[in-house]
Length: 107
Image 1 (tube, helix red, strand yellow):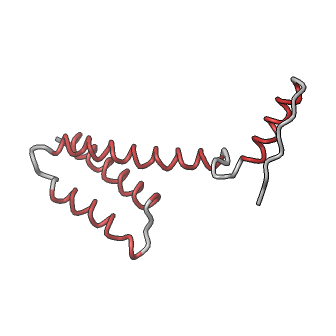
Image 2 (image 1 turned 135 degrees about the vertical axis):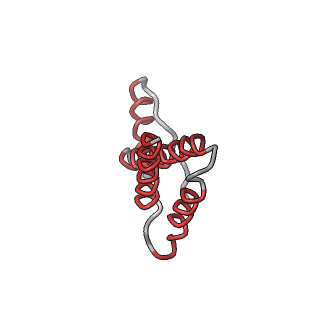
Image 3 (image 1 turned 90 degrees about the vertical axis):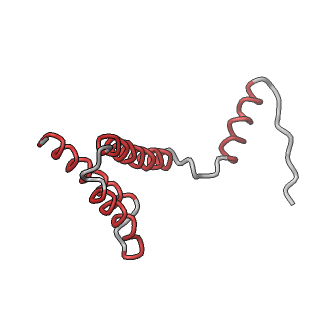
């Protein structure tokens, strides 16, 4: 029984940390942490607590993964407009076979 309590405490701590880190701890976002706390208290003694702990652990993993993926995309500058860079690459590719790209009219 104490193993389940330790597991529940760890999952509870992990999900609260993830919510505070990724959602925020501002006053207008406090309802997210309040909801997590309320759900853990409500389901502490239920029969399906093992399933709900797995669901909470999976949600924590999902939340952390989405935000690390977003950070990775920003580190690759995915939000930067790459049209000029692509024009240079295409121009070099065309020049390597003796062609030129047409000038596109810019209004």
